[in-house]
Image 1 (tube, rainbow, N blue to C red):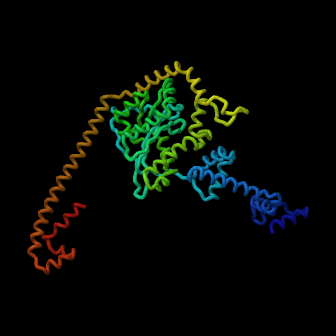
Image 2 (cartoon, rainbow, N blue to C red):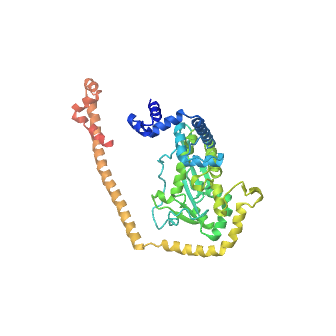
Length: 439
């Protein structure tokens, strides 16, 4: 009706213009032109757009399948569409398509298992040499932590220890076991050294390499500390109770659990669960394109970070297969950096040693305060325990007298006492009210 009226006004040169007509009928300009565009879609533009959106949704579905059922976020979808299918799609459009598909990005769940053995004393633990400066270069800061997962009908727990390059986000070594032990950490460390020991040795010739972790007793064990020092690493420890000091590692475990914890829980046995986790960690390094890594996988980003060459299939017509590898180029460049790096390493060592200084007087005063607080706490418990013992002994004596009283009662009285409320009539049985102290 509105469109018909507007057309009549156009025929009459002295009539109202389109905007005036729309205001008369209370119709918005955008709504009218959108309706008109849909109605007059002579060239099938709307149908073409729908077809294009359906094609992109099909590619997104294939990405979800390729990621083993994990629904990524809109930024990850954008990178995957470009890397896997050479499609450039705006993140807003991807968010709209996700809504149409009724899928939501899987978000990390809160991890209730955060408490493990930790070391308390500042003078007995290594310093925090990293100090949240995670991104100083590839293979410079190696993060490590332990998390738990579970499988099967009875939610049987098992543990995962990972050593991870903070800069490239590559998982360098890991171990999976039934117990959160020192052996678990050492197995993951040996796996890292077996797979990437040469790379780490090259970096240590020029710069210090830090292994950063929390204050778990497994990491602070003397055997593991000695292992790190013998291999030339600098051990760094998070402050007690501060998860931000190892934030990239915590974030990775959160994403790992978001992606596969429900799948692991469906495994019937430990071997299947371990195989699934191993498969995810291997795929993460070589197949997970990441928005913050310039659209590369962690392995590709390491080559790019160490050579400066973005990985492609060919370079201006020259196939990558006939060229040197990124590792070859990196080794050549490393030869010319040894002398300068030695100077930097010495300066860094002096700076780190300066940060380890503490005020002995303050440390001892603080330790005395802690010890006094612990002593007072146990004294309070001792007093409370003494009072409770006295009360319970009194109740026990009354219970003994109550038993003697019961023996003197007739069958009629005993039958009456089968009803619990009847006990209130007899002061000889009042000990039952003292029993409340037990609960």
